[in-house]
Image 1 (tube, helix red, strand yellow):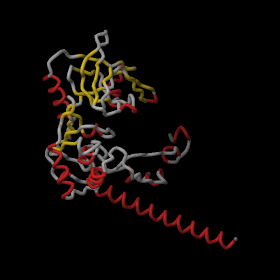
Image 2 (tube, one colour):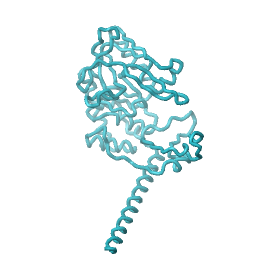
Image 3 (cartoon, rainbow, N blue to C red):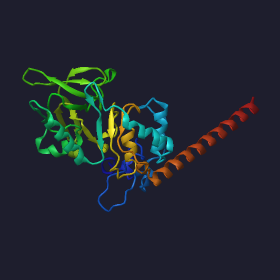
Image 4 (spheres, rainbow, N blue to C red):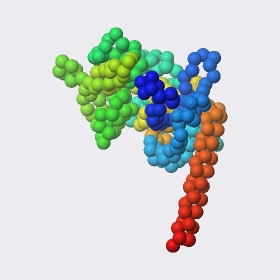
Length: 318
């Protein structure tokens, strides 16, 4: 961007709007490399001039659950938090034939679980192949697309939507369902009953993204993935109606918070083996947020003082 815009500023002077929560999963680093967040980069202060903290929770509405998650996010695990999360182990893991999705810490566990559970179902396997814009760049497409090049389903398969289809009906990214049938036509598209109460035939959808040198790539595929299990990493950004979590193999700071906060409610959450020790937050991130809040308070005080002085000056003039 510097070369194109012929400007020496970071990113060629392009305005940046960066959104995210540093108290979720940290950046993925190479082995033996120290984890560094973008706010620790030398260019951060040069690029980011205004910092704002959003404080209103939208995914959850239950105040008790919101308070619990706020504590876990900061690495705090009180006796009340422990009690509430331990109690969830008795919650139902099945509603209307739809099983709770199990969040796993490791990708290998996800693949093994989904393949094994699909094999255990009787009946014919229905295979759906993706239509990619450039088959030579399939690895690049796989890395950016939320669905694979091949989707295999059976009657009774637990699935999850990977794209917003109809927000008003609850057919959103992360919505859980079960395959209840297949069309008799040539395409044999799957019919899915969702937890939101909607039963619908799911058609092919298209994803478009940029590849090397700005070339546009695309994939057409069913917006479905097997959902007996998904990784905590892949669950980031999702809202799940029913979640089952095993936290015994948590290895990363913020990982427990990401997993727990995918649930919309305590009733839709089942923690199998909760241990308070897995609730951890990165000290450098906590320090960043403390400094951010302190700076915001100083800014507010400064604006308030300046506003008060203006009012006095205006009063004198009148």
